[in-house]
Image 1: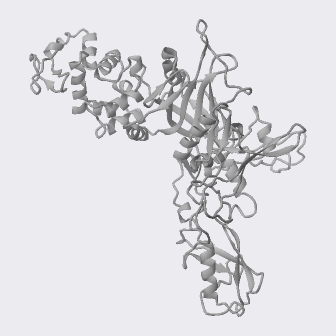
Image 2: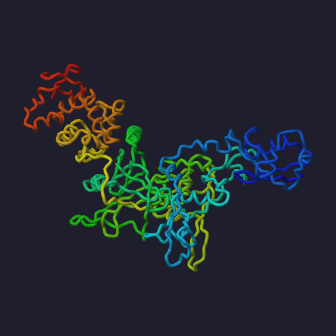
Image 3: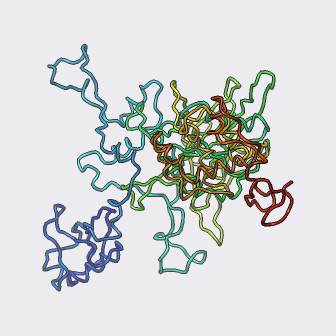
Amino acid sequence: MQIIRVQSPDGMKKIPSTKRETAAAFLKKVAKEFGFNSNGFSVYLNRNKTGEILSQNKTLSLLKIKHGDMLFLFPSASSSSSGEGMDTVQEDEIDQYLAKQDGKIYRNKDPQLCRHGALGKCVHCVPLELFDEDYLNHLDPPVKHMSFHAYLRKLTGGADKGKFAALENISCKIKSGCEGHPPWPEGICTKCQPSAITLNRQKYRHVDNIMFENHTIADRFLDFWRKTGSQRMGYLYGRYTEHTDIPLGIRAEVAAIYEPPQTATQNSLELLEDPKAAAVDEIAAKLGLCKVGWIFTDLLSEDTRIGTVRYSRNQDSFYLSAEECITAGYFQNQHSNPCKLSRDGFFGSKFVTVVATGGPDNQVHFEGYQVSNQCMALVRDECLLPCKDAPELGYAKESSPEQYVPDVFYKDKDKFGNDVTFLARPLPVEYLIIDITTTFPKDPQYTFTSTQRFPIENRDILGETQDFHSLATYLSQCSSVSFLNIVSDFHLLLFLVTNEVMPLRDSIGLLLDAVKTSNEELAQTWKKSEQWATIEQLCSTVGGQPSSSLAYEAMGGPAAPASSAAMWSCPHCTFMNQPGTEHCDICSLPRS
């Protein structure tokens, strides 16, 4: 009996064999151990891919392979187990852009310390690596977390250029396919048992900054709380761009907030099923936007006379509750980050969490967060629970006959200053949180340029409804502006696509392109379509007037005829009836 070591990109394994064993039989053992098919790999005597071991009937002794030798396995291009999909993973545009950047931190020649010519370099002026901790700590303000692409450069740097670098997603589940024992709870072994998890504060973050394009976006979202006192939740739609304040950093720019159906009180929020979710994502994609995060309020008035709010989230209480961390982890798992260095094709998430809450000055502040990849794994595999009486504490589930849960630990200091490992029952959630700076630009930006406000969806409790009467009112307020500015409103576009009377999902593509590219000519072309003419007619039947006729009146033209002279919609069956009739032609019910 002899042991042959086989080194692969996934690590080293020891294969038992005999001197009289043929190379073909040995290669079958290697394929079974590494999970390859027979043609999915090649084994060599040397690291430089020389001396290939072919599947033949020669014994290992004839091939001069003896006990303790190291062989080198390289997956072939056709191997599915080696991650053939890594090169086919379509990463986000911002990731593709940052991967091509140099990333070095260049420094000027120090007049006091540098003693060389203009073309020379020394330790005082040589470019720094972007993951240099001393450099990040001396920035103003200091950077606690390096960017994700800086972390990738750290992994793929060095002499081997990251040849064997790979990002592994944490799994808390028992590996399937172990045949040496009965399934859990009757049996478990070290091969299928997930490893214990020791929680560490993540050193990098996938998003380094959150920026709202302008204050109007946030103010309109806060209006719901100001008018009702109830909390509110919404999805952030925007884009990912480069954040230049941090080396290879990523910024999430927020262009709009979509508020899904929900029930809320002063102390709670409950999301309801949203039948329009797919349509919203489709419209956003055609506008060049994507869902970048979610936002919720946690506000309580301190003094209504001066408009202050209570400062409740701080170091003495919590920044994110365990339940909010679990919700953030759930959303991040739904919006995973495509990554070529991961065998699974994804790693982590760029989905952010924003909390509108009271700050130290008793004014509304926006705080940004993400949860760590460890928290995402615990949430995905249903291993983390909130504590009922302590929102700042989570609780790692215990194993049961239905589910095996690995042990979860965290490190902290005891009263003597020693590092002590604790079982995560309970668990302080600050080990799971990554904070992100949330900002507003000095010069406001506007993806949607409409100056008027079309009602926001799902605010019926405020009396703000999206219907053709509100559309007619909106158009009457926009009579003096260009058509592109009129339709450049995210909530208006959603209404045009999702309304039940005349949805324009299949015919609004040209208008979305016009808004995306700010092209007035495209907008005017779409305005001449039959769909918009029908929309104007529907607006006139509900008591409003199309913007074109209102603009004509504003210039001194004749007034439009009374609504009785226009087509009218039956309140019972919605059929469009000819003017002058008092009973519906379809259901025969009276007009009033």
